Length: 261
Image 1 (cartoon, rainbow, N blue to C red):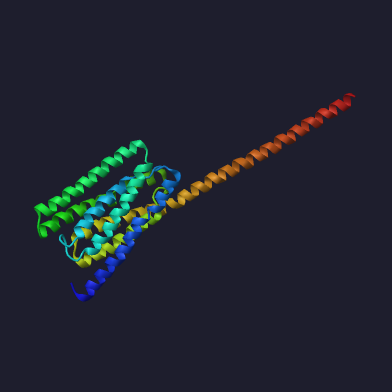
Image 2: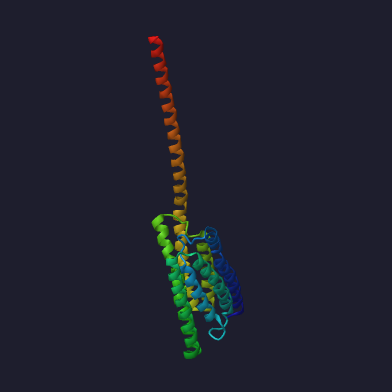
């Protein structure tokens, strides 16, 4: 790798670290809401569990005894694993009992899968074969991680609302994946390139859906408000009409009584 290309490669890695850290921290707004309401509502815990696994495998892949010149991959994903673990624990604490069992089972499966992959990579593979094994595992689960929001995408399409698909999370995915995709192309790393390429495509789909349904969500809320105002205005007109009718009948009754007298 030439000097200029190496410099650009390193700079993109730094930018990718910053964008990915932002991506990891975006859900803090969601978890602030969960803690405040003491409920996970319709949020899904699956993306956080799968992201935790992806971070573990990607951090392992970036270690020097697996691949060279990928230490930036190891550092950011190590930090991401710690952050995602906190998210999973918070989600588990506030989730309904039915979801708790599902999240716990997935978490145990994730930890077991990583432990098994790490032990096998050290004992059974060496050199390029170790890189191939770890890279394939990291790529597969990265694609699973980027695909996990598909359940939220279905919810957005069904409800025509983006309430449970935060904009900044989708935007951060696009920025992060763009940086790492170019980073992978410069470093000629097919594993990072494949996973981030898929993530970039899915992130763009989320942004497109956001801009399609965001205005409709606002319009629906405005329509509901207008309906409430309209119903109130109609009720006021009806009330005034009834009051006038009542006064008219009272006057007529009084006139009749006067005539009789």
